[in-house]
Image (cartoon, rainbow, N blue to C red; front, side, top):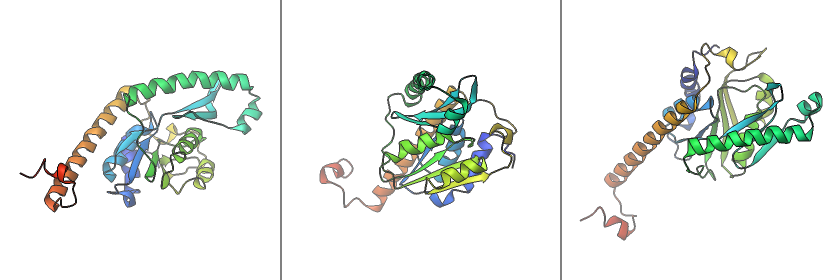
Length: 243
């Protein structure tokens, strides 16, 4: 399947995730930058909060498209020993690349989060969303990061994935939802008609829109609670609403 763009891909993907709709325990995490436009559409359709989990690929020097590992928020680092041994990469090179990517990860954390902590994921159902899976390095790092927070479930949702990467990740999470697994795969961008690089500005704009959606959802809950009755509220809290 060829996707028109990331927004369209997110809308198609969301239709495959309706079992998670309107579940108060669900949190959607987009992997910046390209995963965020897709995650936004998923979160909007599922009526779920959206957040980001910042990850960075560790690319092989002079062959940056080839991932030798990845890092993620919270100090997580994974490496692909097969690639490292195949290309004969030293520990010093890995450390240098990791340091460079850690600086970019920290910059994005500051920009996207604006000092907001990552949502508490303990006991939640976490849906990790990206625009596709090639080697899967960044998604592996995301799974490791989320698992540390003891969620109830972890699901991966992507429009397209390399078949072998899909199979590798399938056993590591509770569910993986993927629209297309073409073989040969070649690259994520090949399966989109339009695949421009997502900018920081786009990510920040979508997060701001998602935050407004969260506020409206919470206001709606508050109105419903008042209409349904508030007999279980603490008396001091109730006094603010009842004359």
